[in-house]
Length: 269
Image (cartoon, rainbow, N blue to C red; front, side, top):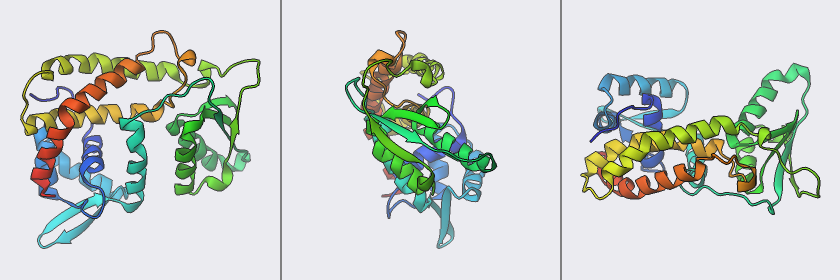
């Protein structure tokens, strides 16, 4: 059994490194990467080309060990991947009684590039826009947000506040791009419900589990980053987020352990 529509080779590689390529033993020989991605359905030439592009961008680093090249995530990305584990595997949801996290910044017109980087970071973290220069997210994102801006050298330009509602209007759904997120959640449910039905109650081999799990996780891992975990009262009635989370959780429980066993057998650690 294999996944029908594969994500990009680049994203599949990053999923493999995020799962099995961290820490002091995170070096993976190129031959093992080719084998693992071939199990998913990627041609060796596609694997090598993607490795080369990620190396040029500084996302991967390499070293020689004997006659073989080995690759690892760049040290700066190790922390970023670790910080994302909770979002991906244990996403949190705020309640209306919780405080909110506000982010504010003011930059001149001559600092457009810096403004773009800050806005892109806030969007990536799941902040919504209250007004130009004022962004909002659930307070449980505070540590992650501060770590992100420190890691990217932007912390001196952004100031964070904890805030509580004091009456009047509540946070508005249109502060976030919920329509885009809802569309992606709905698509995830549509694309993966059939897979869940096929693997539920079936005894898959570790290699089969790996071939399914890596694309599924690759398609999933971007969604929790876009989703800040807003209170249910703010979300649209048609919201597919909870259904998508439950679906991924079930697939993770069915496939992750066997997929890991296969990966570590190939990699050798």
